[in-house]
Picture 1 (cartoon, rainbow, N blue to C red):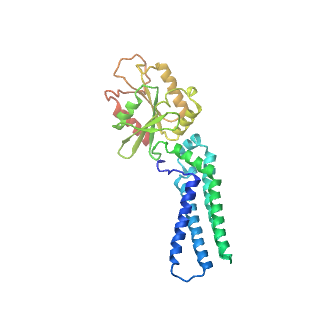
Picture 2 (cartoon, helix red, strand yellow):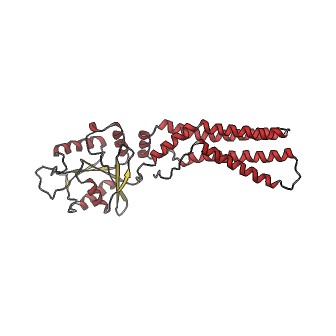
Picture 3 (cartoon, one colour):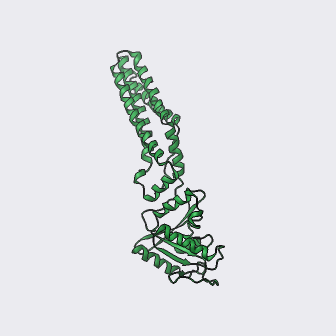
Amino acid sequence: MNFQNLTTIENPETYIDVAFKSAEAAGASKRREFVGKEVNKLIRSRVIEITKIKALTKTAAKLLENIVANYPSIDGLDPFYLALVKCTIDYAQLKQSLGAMAWGAQMLHRLGEDAERRIRATRQLEYVNKHRQAFYGRAASVFKQIKKNLAYLEEARKIMKKYPPVKTGIPTIVIAGAPNVGKSSLLAALTGSAPRVAPYPFTTQQLMLGYFETDSSRIQIIDTPGLLDRPLEKRNPIEKQAILALKHLAKAIIFVLDPTEACGYSFQEQLHLLAEMKKEFQIPVLVVANKTDLPYEKKLAEDTLLVSVEKKLGIEELKERVIKIISA
């Protein structure tokens, strides 16, 4: 899902100005059609003012309808993005604001139809223009009534525009581990290219994305710097919600250990974090010991895969294990 195409939500005055200019342009065009023709003034005035009303109604309602159409169907979002919405935006207010756009469009159509009926029914020339002016005022009032909703939708758009462009329809592996254990380097080794950095709307966190191809599918690998690198009790509520969102994506975890402890964290601390990840995600976990080309004394579990990103040792075997999990 790519939220980069969400268009800017303007203030009411901007929309009112666009709609009114459309109405006046339509009226001027219709007035030119009467040049040189003998037409009753009342009839001519009715036609011109109704043309303005129709143009304003159509333009103004379309502006609001386009806002709704431009937003993704919130309840139809992939669970990952729905989780992001619910923990970065006031979900109820977002839905209420989108509903206000639909209400505004319906109200504009209703007011336009009412103004047209009044103009067709009047027999006095001076009232034709008054009915149109009254409609203009009511139409402007509709936009002013949804001013706060427009402002909130623009605020929400700015947040959603920062959502990472992850591919929710393909198998995804999440890399976890303490800081400085070589997660980003492992991501690059697995994918054969520099990871793509994408913002993650939780404090200053980012996701690092990469992909590698198999004979039958494409696999997405995600590293989460600063997010899955410490125990849950040390995370703030927003980070915990971010992890919940990630749970919707991950089909498995690659957990990276540094048995040399060169990362600055004891081996015991790293094992504690590994236990936390297993408990939190409850999905297959591939345990990888990195930097194993360097001397270390720690005893590793039998199922731990030994790799050296620096020397590219064990990378192909890790890929094979990932493919086996994805294919299961």
